[in-house]
Length: 295
Image (cartoon, rainbow, N blue to C red; front, top):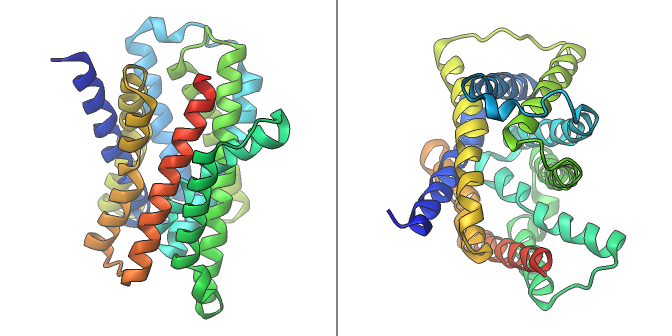
């Protein structure tokens, strides 16, 4: 098979797999922090098996733990916000808001690194903000309290997710000999411990009530946390950034579709237009961010 085609299939498959993440969170029907805890527990166990099978992946396992702890703080916040946003506004829209992280990354570059804002980024941000306003802003006062909280949590997810990606990238630059799988195992162990403690502090149960919940949590951890991201990271290096950005848009787009088909999400025409504009804006923001990195 052509290497580029194979890489494209990897990224496409990964994006499709992780598009179900929010769906599995909703299907699990347990408390938000509990589902986040089991996502990391099962996902970390999956990465642990990979490291046991392939000794090469264990290289440097004893180093880099301080960086991984900082990364885990950001990712724990990401999961804590996002799983609650799913409860308030559903899997599709919460996933769309989480993908606004691309603007967080560029904002950090502009403020801290004094980078210039490109025309592509400015257009992408404008379209995304217009889409966000069409979805929520025009009727903000009419939204129920749960809806407003869900939107705020979704945007906080984008902030935490952007912070996670920034700290992860910085750690890999400082310690390039540490394999990504090893880093993700370290981060997963730290996140599991943090989310477990938070769940205890919130007084939530760790009991998995039935087989359906167990299957949903296993799928969330093993399929979305492990398989999806392995496929994406294996395929990304062989593809142009523009192609990667387009394929990764399958995640929020399909999450909205699954939300419609499984949970009955209904969007008015103007809300559908808002989703479309937000997705186009996110794609342009991704293109601008990757062009900045390539330059």
